[in-house]
Image (cartoon, rainbow, N blue to C red):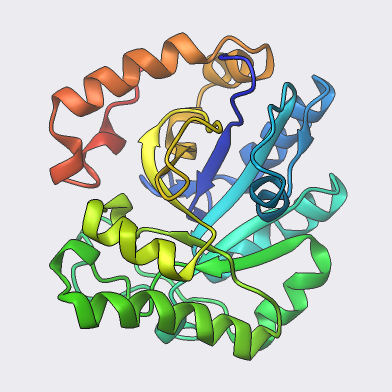
Length: 258
């Protein structure tokens, strides 16, 4: 792994269905066990950003997109390992479900956590950040809609949960210079889906993450735990970009062959 690169792991749902956006809770626990046994520590993402993204030799960060209720299946695991997980919320859908317009048909529908449930999770190592008001692809928004998706989601979290919201994750990972410029007005940092570890050389509003889909095999997890993941990521990234994954946000989830 490149020196100083922070693996920011991205999760969505937690269940044993084997769905493309799902992680088995038992495998999530095994992931944290493997990493902590190898001397890794979970990093608080907002603190890492505020400190200027310093090099982290044996650290990782947990992010969970959308705020599905299945998060409760791993809440005790996060607490057990004294980890911090940042949950990116779709604020207009809190307490509803993930059936927003444009949701790919192959993504199972599921309930989202309520505001009261989110408050309870806050004492177990969970932090909350913005993922838009409605999960609209931001490249389809005019300037007014874009500002409302960004500012509105930030304000809702700060008002309902009573804590700052400096971080944003782009719905479907989709951004462009106009979107990133708007994100800079409202957030200290923003995250995409480019498959890589994160470091201080990256655009602060286009920080890379590693989707948990790629960590489903013991071989890949062991690469991460022993600092040998970077070459594998480079290969997967080349395949993913070559297949046009950026214009078909979920197609890359079917690539895993490790």
